[in-house]
Length: 218
Image (cartoon, rainbow, N blue to C red; front, side):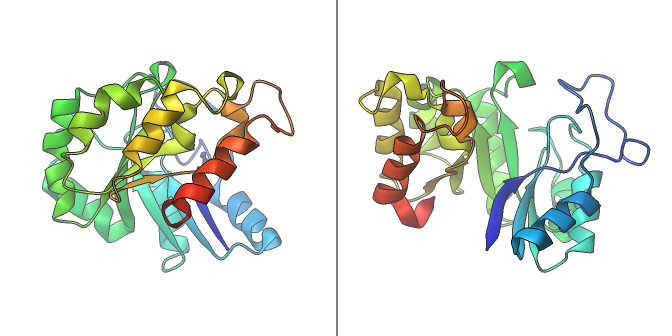
């Protein structure tokens, strides 16, 4: 089994949170806790995604990758002006992509033109782009994203609003984008799509539709 999206937080005495962090977890969730949970659940592989709480300091995630080399890979956070030397170091540590947060509560992302220029650096590493964005942004960014030289992964089902139903325009735009086989979507974060709370039954049809139509890229 593979856990394709998770974070590690701290411990803050070893991996402190930056002063300008958009949020700080109330408690640490370090690698030891994660590994223990994965072992309990029988998860043998994983993709650790750098959290906005730690910003561009990918040290906590890199520490996990060093501990679980060969079993886990990572998705880093990096600025669009990152040098190739920085990216190559991350590659050596086990990172295989870069995530950009376009959610306003996480600070928003760079201009799409800057993102596309940056993505050319990722092509030489065989990496991918990962985007965390509002569902309304999909149609606005699609023309430029289709020019990406690397695969693009959309986080958390594009942050769809389940209360708007399966006929909503944002879902149609996501499905249209997914017709391009360079695009992938993470069927995760059902609690973010749900407007009913646990067990998030209103969001399940969205996950089911994505898996049914694009099961090889979810």
